[in-house]
Length: 414
Image (cartoon, rainbow, N blue to C red; front, top):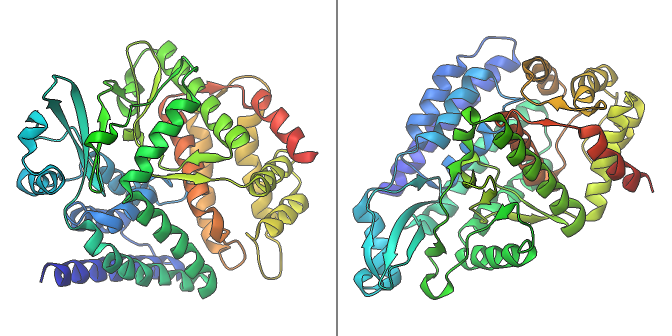
């Protein structure tokens, strides 16, 4: 009965979403605020992949209508926590009598998201730890929710996205969601990253506690910090230090280690009292092949050169442009939006003029979807880079992206 209720709600939300998209496609004005409110109400209680998808969409600030983006962003801040009895059920499934291992588990979570929530606990030895608890029964409803998401994604055909492309995008999304249910893999990623960055004094990564972890619970050392979202009002020096660390870390991940933390949700990052960047969640880490990275840098190179023909060639090589007729005027406008961030000297990521131009450009991007379609194997990568960009915006970062980009562009050219 519960599963049928989830299906009905998802189908209803899909119908409302499709109606709004179709109305916009036909030149009308959709009520994006109302749609966003419906998505918030419908998904904040459902949990699982449907809510995860909405959270992912909320990070595409530069493409979504502002009213819709604002409502979806609430899913990151105000997700309804799972009631304690259900969480206790999951803990007992993992530990049996939880008092065998813990003297106390706080019933109120200090973080909750789409696939699980986090509770502080005290071990019998007096150590404070955190328990990332997977929502009970989530694995059972995953495939059902994904089936409904596939139907919602099929709305992309209204934008002339080929079915094969939609299928490939869905499979990458589904694989990422399934991976997030694998807490053993996340524990291993935590251990790998701790070893990788053990000598970097700017980064802090929690220690996985394998002896307390299992299939549905991931135990980690407790690392207190100020969440990234709360740093928006922090002292400028702290924000700039954290922003520089975040940008350096992303660059090192991509160009040195060939992978990337692919869940840029602001709640996954914080700063400690020393101004070090804390990275909490490693449920989504993706490999980034060198060829894909080189192709993306070639596109950036052409964009910074304001060369629409070279931009189109790079898009074709990436598999992101099909059909006849390159949208050269759109390329020119995109270059005019992006290039200022890479001019010599420090550039202000909080400059609202950049965001305004990106928002003004988004309807033209949607209108060109019959020719511009995201490469199927870059969905998570593009989302991650976009999300990390907006984290830098939240930090009001001032970075010399010209200096940072030059050696990377030289690498791509050679």
